[in-house]
Length: 141
Image 1 (cartoon, rainbow, N blue to C red):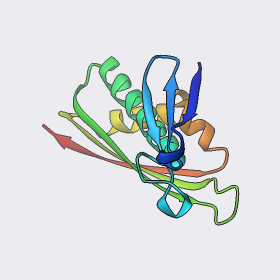
Image 2: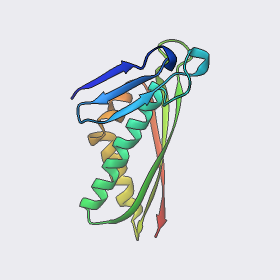
Image 3: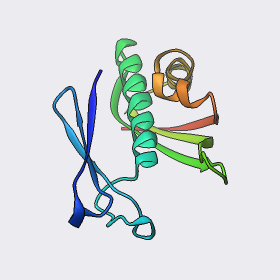
C-alpha cells in the first residue's frame, strides 16, 4: 500500500493532496486558525472517515454473505481526543443505521462484533488508544 501527500503550495495555505496507490486523490486542509483555508477534511477527520468506511464495508459484506437483504448502511462516529499533544482519539462511539428487509438484530450485532474484533483493521488499530463503543438501529425497508 502506498500514498503520496503533497502540499498544494503558497496560496493554498495548509492544504495537501493525498494520492493513493490505487489512483484516487483527496484534499486535506487545516483550520483557518492554523493557517488553513478549510478546503478539505482535517487529517484526523480522514482517519475517522476511513475507520467508518472500513467498518461499514465489513458490516454490509458480512450481512450479504449471510444472505440478508441489506438496502443501506450508515455509521456515525463521534470521537473524543486527548487534551494535550499528541491529541490521539481517546473514545469513539459508532452508531450504525442498517436498512434492510426483516434484518434480525442478532445478525446485525454479530456483523458489527466481527468487524470490531476481527476484520476492521482501522478500528482495531485505533482501539490501541481509544475506547470504542457502539450501538445500532435497524430500519425495515
